[in-house]
Image 1: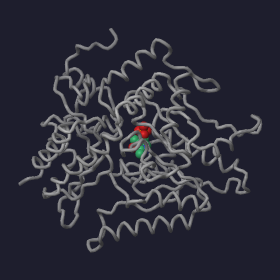
Image 2: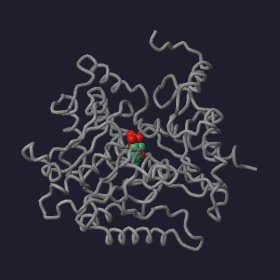
Image 3: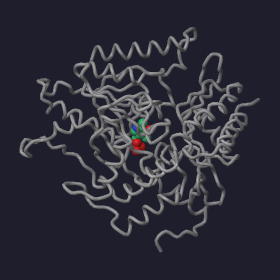
Length: 458
Ligand SMILES: *Cc1c(COP(=O)(O)O)cnc(C)c1O
């Protein structure tokens, strides 16, 4: 018996408590916060072991694009099983990742020429960083390895492996690991909601850009690369940038002779209304990292896209050691690449991006209503992604004590309206499937309003 499907919810909960350690989860409160025990999915809904259905309003942590059990992706994976599940990309190839690379580049910024696979967002960023470092050692301009530092913004998140954590800037997640991290150049935080009481938002935005420029001016010559999440900082709390920031940053980084890594792991694959968020600002990066949505939320496949300029610095007789010595066992997994190809088919066949742009406006209009609520301090949106920050005092922009877990309480309350949400601190996160319907958007915003009211009124 491999995986009985008739086990009671009670038993599953018991075994979950007995045997499983969950990611980003404080286990002392885990059970009290009423986690779902998912046994199935259907379209935009998760189905719990007790048969209840919940709108998957965070797209199973930002990767599910078109709902669960999409026929096209299901069929592509099933069909692939009749050929092969996986074979190595180390010194060999496989038809699925080859075709996917070509198709992916058709959707990517024009500067992107090559695709290097891995299996999650963290590795896709880690790979860009290692490639950048080695690129400068092998690049023929006399600089020979002087560019060894990386720059990341305060509040940034690029994953949980050591390079990604080093360039990341969220103290709560990252500070414990200080002794094993390498030193990075820290840029400013684009957070402009939390600012001195008398300062205007415009002024805070200007300061952010000025500070960014100053750090580049001071460190530009030692920077191997700068890593930026385009459009919005995700895990840092759904933080938007001043309009036009990415285009400005790209130019500044180019002028400093360094390389730009856009971490599109969260905002890539259509979330911005373009396939990649950097395209919304007409930016051509040196590296583009894509993961979460690449397979429609089915199978872990990630990719690091880069230019011929970078690729060519790695060419030469093998004994010169210019080879990129990095690779994972499941690099270019064929089942995952089949799912990714079906995902691109859906984008192409259904005008998904047009529809995302329309729903971006619809969501913005619906979220307007939440400004009326006493404890809503800020609402930040980019494409079909949004964060609603609840605070103890909106006039003073004063946060709740984190021990109250207000964000989590609101999400748990919204569960009563059949909506699954997961917050970032006191920021309620919306990352719905790109195919969410207009009615579901209404229901989702209503459920958040209900949750805020249930937890904070009176
Ligand atoms: C989730 C995320 C990552 C890490 O991806 P994993 O697949 O979880 O390793 C990196 N960057 C951004 C912007 C992300 O949102």
